[in-house]
Every structure is written in C-alpha cells, then in structure tokens.
Image (tube, rainbow, N blue to C red; front, side, top):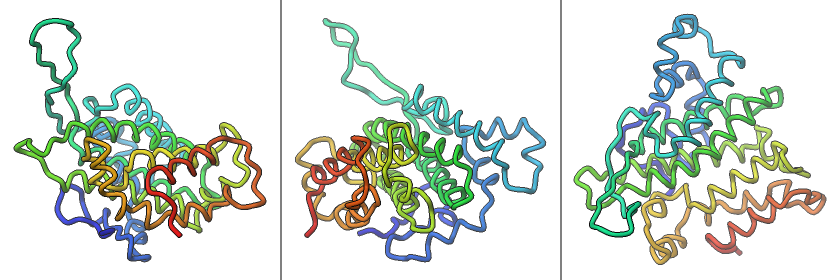
Length: 284
C-alpha cells in the first residue's frame, strides 16, 4: 500500500504526499521554507538567536540556506544517532560491550524517528524548491549530500526501534519511509533537473551524487517501513514482493544514465542497477 499512513507526529498539512495522487506534490508549494526550517530542532535555536532571519517575512535566501545545510550534513555525519539534533532522545539497550569478560549492559542514546522524518521531508522540499532550471546548484548539491548522510542515520535510528518497547509506534517508521518516498519522487520529477544530471554523470558531479543517493535508498529499503523494521534477511525478503521500489523501478530505468547514448564515466550507474536487481529483482 503506497498511500500515506495515518497518525504520527508530523504536521501532515505539509506531509501529504500520496504516491497515487499526482497532485499531492503541490501541497507544499505555498509553504514558506523559513517556517519549515524554523520547526526543526536541529536549527531552531540558531534561528531564534538571529532576529534578522526569524523576523523576516521572506523565504530564506540562498546565502542563509546553504550554511544550515552544511550544519545538518556535519551533524548527521558526526552524530548519526541524532543525539545532538533531536527534540526527543531515548536510551536503548545494545548488544555491544567494550569488555571481553563480565556481564556488562551498554546503552546508547538515539533520536525519535519523527524528528528524523521531519528533516528528511524538509530536505525534499528544498529539492523541489531549488530543482528547476535556474535553481542554485550549490543548494542542490548540499541538499543531496545531507540526504546521503541521513541514509546512514536512518539505518541507525530505526535499528533501535524495538517492537517490544512500550512506546513502539510503527507510524513513526512509516513517517520516515514516506519522507524518503518524497525524496524519491522529487529526484524523478521531470520538471526538476536531477534526473537530467544523470546523463553522462562523471565522478564528483551532481549526477553522480543523484545516482549515489538512489543507490543508498534502494540498498537500505528506506522507502519501506517494514524493511526498516526488519532485523534479518528473511524478513526483508518477505516484504520485497509488494515493495515501493518494485512498483516504481521503471522510472529508474528511464533515467538518462541508462539510455543507450549515455557514456558510463562513473561506477554509480552500475551500482544503482545492481542494488535494484538485488533488492527487488526485475519487473517484466
């Protein structure tokens, strides 16, 4: 079922993207990027200290957005569990112990999946807002880099969500999955430049970044809440038949990177194709 799950902690007036509704991606176009950014725990305190931004009635200009993207990227890389940028953290018991002997229980601090979903969704909005022909290329690149960093954070944060926990809520993982579906759709939007970048993508180019992001989304099954929750290979295989990726992989094969006239200058194209085949097979 590709429709958006009900419930959860996000503001669904923004987070209303149904895969079956081609008009759903228009919901956020009237929203102000400044307001969405200001709601993120990661940068809320920064915005509050900068009255010139907080009191502004205009959308954040490019020079102000780029530093925040750099902050998100750095925090996601150094603190992938989200302990420094989440509004809600929880201590989780782990199987890891630094000691060779003795009965020692270790714990780690990880963020609430809803905060992670909020950041991913916010970045999907930036993909849309700055993805047109005259969009700022640096913001496009930094947004994709942020999302690449957050793929690892997604694995780590969702890893600590245990079904047996008293406060376990599958809707939170659904929010994360749908946020990644929003990213997927924006990257494939024909009115945006991202799919075109993949034509003759070269190393370190925007096109290679796009292909790398697709690959990480596919490898991790980030668009499927059940895969995010799965703890073993058998569980993952069980949900592949009805996966979002299997239903929508045709759009990937239609990327310019896979056209007969495209020159393969980077291994990212091969890695993406391999990831799709391994994850969900080929749809006839």
